[in-house]
Image (cartoon, rainbow, N blue to C red; front, side, top):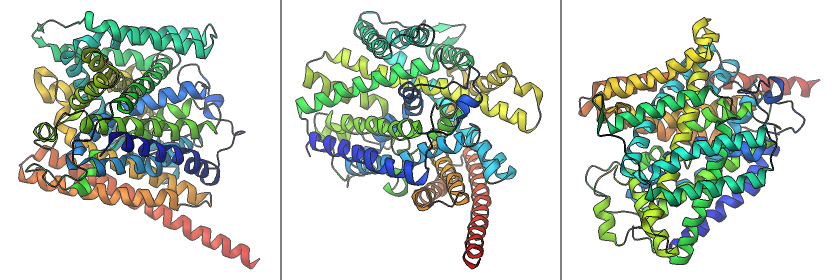
Length: 563
């Protein structure tokens, strides 16, 4: 199969989905109101609640939800063949992710910018809220702890990326000052910022930076992990306009430039997809495509983590409610484009089918490394850019998005902990500094307590991320559905994807239970059961609320009809 055909078909479907389907959902289902006073204006404080230009906010939202997951998931899932991954990414982006992400922002905006967990308390009940927030905290803990390990590994493997990765922070700080303090022109500032960032990428290979082999007995990976969490703690307490918004915004522009380079390389080089459309010779031990495909590819199709960002930071910065469509839906489209790039890089960037099968010799192979290597080959062949610079470009893309996800993830953990302080009246947890220290502390305890000196403890519970994350997406859609029913609006556009998602995810979770039992992995087995029980209880509470509301709606209509 020709890579150009797959690329153009995927982009065309997503473009039509945004122009047509997102307009329908925004106007007919969510009914976004340009005159609604958003929490960004109602509670404006210059720190967390800041009315924001929709293009800048799109950059924050998109890069926060992107991370490394829309690269890793598709780069692993192509082991079943490129076609299933392609269909789930493209159709999932339009009919699942866009509806979910925009819906989570809308639900939060309509509930004083509360997190989706806190919104659950208002919409469903206090018991469901408590259980939901436990699942949310576990997802954030997994994301932050694991992304620290992933970023550290990439910085060690590609030392040429260190200068542009950390230099991007300085670029973002300057952009924040120019936009908010100096009121500089956004277009000019954006062009200069992207130019500086790409200048750093070009000089990166000539200025590789590596940390000492050991410092106080800590290996390189541990040193990077500690530095990353120190940075994330500081970044999470700064006003969003100072670092978070401009960093995410410039990274969003950088991604589209990077995607443009990769897509243009495909159009010029016209590589063939060496991987089969359906892989009939998967390696021994590879789980079944159904239901595992739908939890292996989360970000890039639909992801519960998106709902945390949407209701945690994004909803506090929405200037007009109608911006929800652009920020939420178009943010999902951007991530779908990244996932599509990952599929093409890992199936068309490998020279031969034999080499591809060797690379994908076991489930879990591929990942970011396959994306960087395959994408660099396509860029080098298509545009003649030196392979080392191309690899640096793609590595910086992956690291910057993982880094912005960590920034937002730690801030979200702080919000959750502060919400617990408010809910249970625990005064110390209401303090931002204390909440941040608790958030970072739990991540480091997991990283080093479970993983030892190398700080890889987050990987211990990572096998549960896919299923937990997708359960979270399903439960978020459930809360949105209950809201729609209460408002007397059509519910099928959220109910259908949530039903499909819950069936696939609970099926995958049950398969994992059997796997953990057979491996005598009692820790993951118990944690899996806790997550499953919490999710089922929230589901039952929500279904009861939904059923009661539907009955009340029917009685109201009947009473009105008989009057």
